[in-house]
Image (tube, one colour):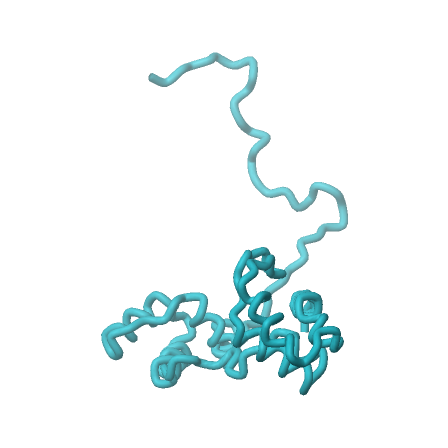
Length: 177
C-alpha cells in the first residue's frame, strides 16, 4: 500500500460520508447517489470526472463488507505476470537470452518477429528478464577482477619515458608548412 491508496480511501469517505455514517435515511439513499453521480468531482489523481451510479453503489457495498480496506484501490491480481497470453513469446525470449547472454533486446525482437510475427517492447522484455533472472550479469560467468597496485619506495621513481629530452626553448624555431 502506498500513500496514494490512502488518498483514494479518504476521497471515497468524504463523498460517501453521509451514507456511510447513516445520516441519509434508507429511502433517500438512491436519490442521494443519483445526484452525486451527476456532479463533476475532483479525483485524487487531479482529474475532474463524473462517477457512475454503479461505481458509487459498489463502493458503498465494499465499505459495508470490508470497511476502509474496501475503499482503497486494489492491486491487480496478475501484477508482474504476462497478461495477454503471450507465454510462448516470453518463454522464447528468455530461452534466446539464456542461449547467448550477450544478445540485446533488439536482436531478440528480430528473431521473435520472424518466429511469431510480433515483438516485445524493450522495457517489458528487460523487466521480465530481471524477474526470471535472465540478465547478462547473472548469466555470464564472473571473471576475476585484476587489480594491481603500482608503488615505489621513493617519490617519482615510477615515471617512465624520455620526456626530459625534448626540444629546447632557446633553440631555433622552425615552422612546418
